[in-house]
Amino acid sequence: MKKNRLMGLALAGAVALTVAGCGGQAAPAGSEDKSASAEADYKVQMVTDMGGVNDQSFNQLAWEGLQQLEDETGIPVNYTESKQEADYATNLDKAVDAGSNTVWGIGFAMADAIQTAAKSNPDVHFAIIDNAYPEDALLDNLTGVTFKTQEPSFVAGYIAAMTTQTGKVGFIGGMKSDVLETFNWGFQAGVAYANATEGKDVKVVSQYIETFTDAAKGKAAGQKMYSDGCDIVFACAGNAGNGVIESATEANKMVIGVDKDQYDLAPENMLTSVMKNVDQAVIEVSKQAADGEEVGGKNIELSAKDGAVAISEHHDLMEDAVYEKAQDLFKQIKDGKITPPGTEKDFNAYVESL
Image (cartoon, rainbow, N blue to C red; front, side):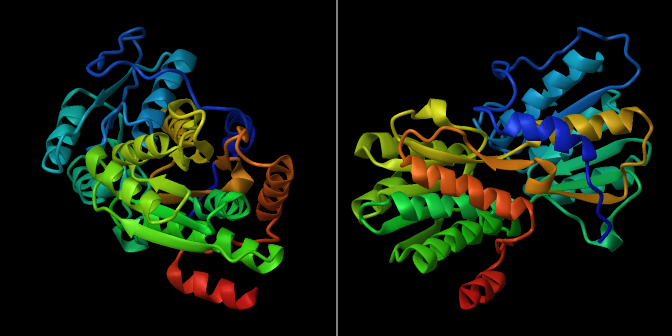
């Protein structure tokens, strides 16, 4: 598989990911028209998955990135929200009809629709967050962007194992996929590392709820995990994860956020957040495409080494020594001394090596 590194992320992303939050405030729902620089020749538009632009997660981060792109370059940006899977193809067509030069699809669920749209519109550049295409499926006008989210998830797992009082922590994922599995197994590996090196005996409960949009289902899953003895749950389910966060606040338990720094959603309950710099990735790829660089036909995999993933700087709910060790672990990951697993097979091999 062809891969390329976004070198700009090592500068812009590293700074953005070591502070609380990523990007500015999201525009209110329905604020789709951005016309500050309508005279610009290049246009960029994104199509959200079903989580919507205000999901407090990766759709929102992508939109914040596009707004920053417009502020920095004058390139007009826009978005369209998808309410259901059937909207993907229609919304991509609308983006092309609107004269967009780069069209983003946000989320692996849009992979097939993005690929089909790219085949039908060879003069338009398409890019997708959280999907890498097989080499024989890549097109000259198609870019896949993925993140090694097992890296910060590993650190979050270590933090959870060192912080839990019950010896039981949980993971709640949205729809099971290769992308979500990197969070799951990275998190479990961090717990396993703490068990092996710190004399802990922490158990992990893992569950997929098969939705990124149903906050009520996320809340119910969170309530069940907390009532069953988990005192920390990693919520990795988009909008549905917001329901998990709500269950944590009601139960006065701890929760781990995802994609962006979600500290502000529950300051008294948010242990940490596993962050990926979607906003900077969207900015860098869009800039390169607008400048005429050949960004199509590639899968771009971003990691801690690129400054593209991190954990939140907020650590109110953990001991200082745990946070300091977590920072050391993250540095070891960046330096290649620790390689967190992103699949069940790699997880099993990693545990055997401890």
